[in-house]
Length: 158
Image (cartoon, rainbow, N blue to C red):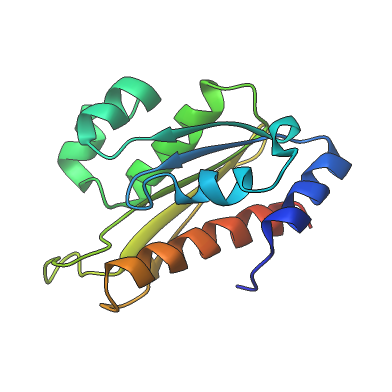
C-alpha cells in the first residue's frame, strides 16, 4: 500500500470535511503523533485513544471481553471493535485502529510482526486486514504499522 504524508492526508480530509480518530495499541500513539506533528491538524484530528492494555480496550473503546477471550487482543475482531468504538466515542467520521505484536516475542500462532488494522467510517462497513511485517524488530514494526495506518486513511479518502 502506497504511503501518504501526513500533510497530504490532512489536506484531503479537509477537502472532504472529515475528521479522524485513532485507536492504537502496539503503535502507542505514533499515528496520532504523525498527524499532530503537522501544524493546524486540530481541525482534522479529533482525538486518539492509546489502549495498550486489554482493560483499556474494554473501558475506553467498548471492546467486549468475550471478543478478547475468544480471539485475543491481536485479531481482526478486536481491531474492528476498537475502530467502531473509537468512532462511536468521538466526533470523528473516520477511525483507524491498530493492534499487534511489535516484538520481541510472539508465538507460532501469533508471530512477531503481525498487526491487525481496522478502518471504520460512518455509514459504511468496517474494513479489517492483517499484515505480517515480519520479525524486523520492535521499532521497525511500529514504524511500518504507523505508515500502513496512514496509508489506510489515505485510501479511504481517495
